[in-house]
Amino acid sequence: MATNKNGPSLTTNRLALFPDSTRIRKDSLTIAGRTLASLADEFGTPLYIYDRATMDASVDSYKAGLGAHYTASSEITYAGKAFLCKAIAEWTCQHKLWVDCTGEVEIGIAMAGGVPRDRILVHGVNKSNADLISALRHAGTIVVDNMTELERISSLFSDPRFNDPLQPMRRLFPNIWLRLQPGLAVETHHAHTQTGQSGSKFGMTPSEIIEAAEICKSSNMPMTGLHFHQGSNFRDTSPLVSAIELGIDLVKENGFNEPWHFCPGGGWGTSYHEDELPQPDIEEYVRVITEKVNEKCKSTGLSLPYLHLEPGRSLVARAGVAIYRVGTVKRRGDRTWVLTDGGLADNLRYAMYGTKYTCLTATHLSREMNERISIAGPYCESGDVIIEDLPMPKVEEGELIAIPVSGAYHLSMSSNYNGARRPSVVWLEEGSARLIVRRETPEDLYQRDLSII
Ligand code: PLP
Image (tube, rainbow, N blue to C red; front, side):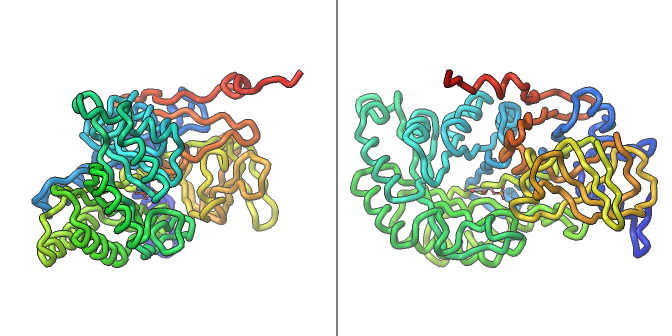
């Protein structure tokens, strides 16, 4: 195996970023018993694969943390924005997760996957009428982002289409949670992934929360919870602990209905590169949250809330691997460009946040890592780069590159730039590989266009 002059094998370190079922067999990468080369042959590239075992294990870590440290009821809500398709929605049902949906289309995908109404929770910073109507028809909970939205919901509350007082079982108005902007940022790798700071576009200030709670109470709306989300991909829990204190103080002041729901969001981090190992510990994150909630409820005399955690990335990022085929290698002086068939259109994260990725080749893993390479896609943007200056073996044209930690915020942010067709997605369970999203065809793209002639 390739060794690093200064210590353990780089390959071994990088393997820790791959799904749990990843092995090296005959010098090639396998996941859930399948070689990446055979998957690329069967499904084509660029290709995204999801390892079910890794996703199950991350849910188990959340459940273990809650089971060990929290005595009242709790739920895990999968943040669908990380990546949602019908099969993932079905997987959430198997674990009895709630699903956080942004807007009517994600609500529709959750429903298609069989997610029951009471486990559909709707977010959105500027929900359209269609989003709101869909949420009222199909969701169990709406997280209200702002006062304007609350006014719109309040007028729909008296609309018999959504809230028929004579037939309460026919139309149950969703529970209303208020989204707090705690004014406290978590430390993330980029400002674009912070959401809880003062001046952010998300949520309501503490004084707006007080006003919103009054409106809900005076109109008898089912305001049952408080929510905040401070940002995505953080490891330091101190701002989270302060925000939990602030949130529980607000609930105390405003006399929320009991039993009350409390959600301190998601955002727990994931390592993307060997320099960021070890992986942040999910159980430890859950322990910090639950200890603070327990302590604060005791000191304020509040009953323990129904506690909700809302992770996306830490449930699915490491389960996903992107497989690209190398088309061209340009070796010029000390710069080697490895040009692949995937890039910015399926993974915006380097261009948007400068996320530092790493990779392995799918085969010939025992080669020395004696070259430094940059990996870029086929798109007409100099920012279409995935990796810069990474120690790798001498990669050949036609080889496959596997990029770990590709399961969150890749496909959900993907585009058709330069006519890119969004890739196939394959679901891996030990021994089986099933297509769960087919690759877009040219016809999928052409059929939206209308003529002016
Ligand atoms: N909840 C809300 C409201 C979010 O906006 C996000 C992500 O931005 C999440 C949960 C999930 O964050 P992560 O995927 O980092 O866990």
